Length: 527
Image (cartoon, rainbow, N blue to C red):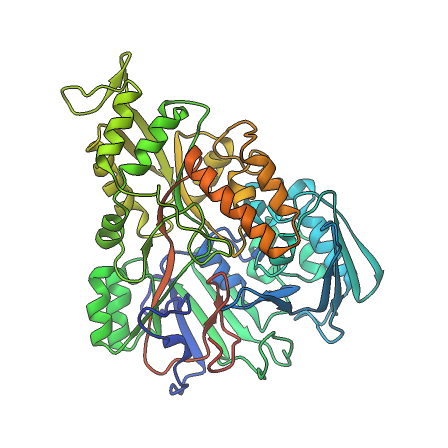
C-alpha cells in the first residue's frame, strides 16, 4: 500500500474506555475517507482474510448470511431474512432476501450460497490462506437448494457454531464469477465481486486499495440506512506510528490505526479521540508444541505461565485500551471466565521448576541432565506490539531460569511453519465472537498447533459444546473447558488484542461489528 501522506487509519472498535469517535457528527464536508493501515492487507478475498488489516478492507465489499449484534452477541438476519437450526444441530436453513444483487448485477440465490460453501470445502481450499473460512465448515456435507431462496446447509456432525460463523467476514457470500476463479486469482481486488455497500475500484497488491460506494445498496442489517457515508474510501499504509500521529495534526489523515503509547499525547493535542475494544476469541497466546522440546513437560508450561507479569506487558508495550489475558478466551467472547491460575507468581514458577528437576546454573539458565531450559517462539510482526511484548516476555522468563529465543517471520512463512508444526512455541491470536474457537484452534481434531494427541479431559467436551443447542448448557461446558485448558497448558494466555484507533474530529459514519471488524455502512449513531 502507498507509503505516502494521504492516509487514514482504522477505527476498529466500539469503546467505553475513552470515547466513541466513530460516532461523531458528520461535520466533515469531504465525501472521501482517507483510511490508513499500519500494514498492508494480504489479499482482497474475504475468505482468505487472516489479518485484521485484510478483514477490515474485505468486509466492506462482502455481506454475510447473518449479522451479530455488537452489544449482545445475538444473531440477526442480513442476506438471509430468516434462519433455523435443526434440533440435532446438523442442518441450518436460510431463507434468502429476494432483493439482493451482487455489484455485477447477478442476483443472490441459494445456488450461489451453495457454490460459495462448496468452494471453501474443495481440495484447493486446504491451503493455509483459507484456513479460518474452511475451519468454520469442518464436517460440511452439502448445501441443498430446494428453491432459489432456500439454502439448507448440512453437516455430518452437530455444529451449532456454524450460525455465528455465517456472520463472519470469512464466510461472506461472493458472486459466482468470483467463486469460479482460483484462490490465487481471488486475491486481486478486480476479481472480488460482493453484495456489499462498496466495490473495489482499485487494487495494487501490497500498495493500495480504493473502494467506491455502490448505488442502490439497501439490505444492511441496521435499520434506517439509506446509503454509506463516504463515496470513496482510500486505503494506504503508514507503518511508522509517529508519522501517522503527526499526520492527524497536519490534516493529512482522517484517522490513524494502532496508535502507540508514545504518540497518544500528540493525537489528543490535535483533537483526535481514542477508541478501543478488546477482540473476542483467542487472546494472544503462547501455544506450545507439546510433541518436542522442554514444553512437552506440563510443569514447564505452567512455570512459563506463572512467570509472566501480564500487567507489566500491557503497561510497558501497549498502554491504554489493552488488557492482560486472564483465560484462554478473551473477555468479550461469549462464555468467557477469568481463571485465577492465570496469574503472576515468580515463586510458584521457580518452585515448579525445582520440583521438575531443573537446576540453576552459573549463567542463570536452568539445566536438567545436561539440557538447557530453552525454547524458541515464532511470530509474525503484523501487530506492532508483538515484538516488544515478546522481548519483555523473554526478560521475564529469564528471571526464573528459562531461555527464550524469538524468531520473527513474514506472514506467509509464519502461517506455513505454524501449520507444519515447525516450532517450539507459536505466538498468535484469533478473533472470533464464539467460544468454538477453542475447538478449532486448541482441539486435537482442529488445527492442533500443539501437535498433541487426544485428551479425554478436553476433546470430548470440545465436541460436546459444538453440538449443544441450548445456550446456557453450552456455555456451562465452555466454562469447564477453559479451566481444563489452562490447567493443561495447551495455550498460555498473554494479552488481549484490542483494536485501538484515533479519529479526527468531524468524521462519522464508521462502526464496528461484534468481532471488532470495521464497518463503513452504519448510519450515524449506530456504533
